[in-house]
Image (tube, rainbow, N blue to C red; front, side, top):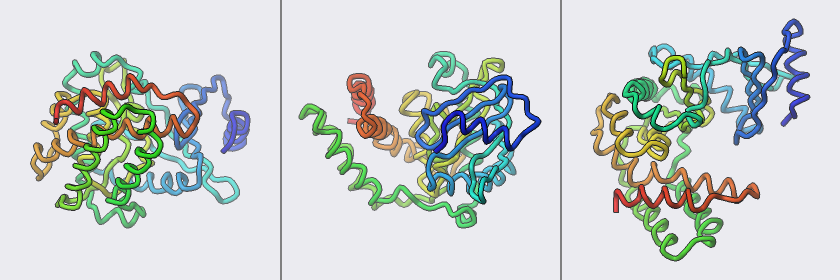
Length: 298
């Protein structure tokens, strides 16, 4: 993992004729550091070796997805290597701001946003799952994965909570883990991290305009790609997106998996990240939101 000065030096070496007038860096991401040059070029530097392998697969996935002609823009990657190892990807800057920086009302009040997300997910999930082998995409969300998450939550999060909160979280996991082996779901290639951080909002257009960062793409349950939408924007907006989503599966069955577990579990990743990195979790806000969403299904 490099620092800001090393990033700048690498970019200057790769593009000696590039006049750098403005340099912006975002090193807050879990998997990648982002550098934006002159508000026109984006350089994404993977932080870890396992992320490098995922980034190399992204280009193939984006190529297949573009053939489906989604309305939302996608990054067009150029791979840059150093000592025969992928150092970063470069793509043209996609105008706009992270959706998470936009007021909820501005986003939810424009019904076009639900249509655009429904179109994007329809086309992503319609890619032939057999193509996953060509990109080395695996199924990561196995029963063992979710059991391990539950174990981590029990050991690292629950000790901080009240008994009532512990019981509620254990119940949510227990119900999901009991039902999971019985799911007869046709797996799709999924984005894997479709959150407000990876959706671009164009203030000029007054709507979302692009989706970025397919690092967590995998073969999995298509319902999982609605998790971030549900956690951030709630039940009604998620149902609006589903009304534009085309699938052979019952929309009600898919939504049930989102509402009962997938759309609740983002809080566990956020809390674990904070605890493991020495940050102070916002227990009140996170658990308050979790409790409000859980009340819709219990």
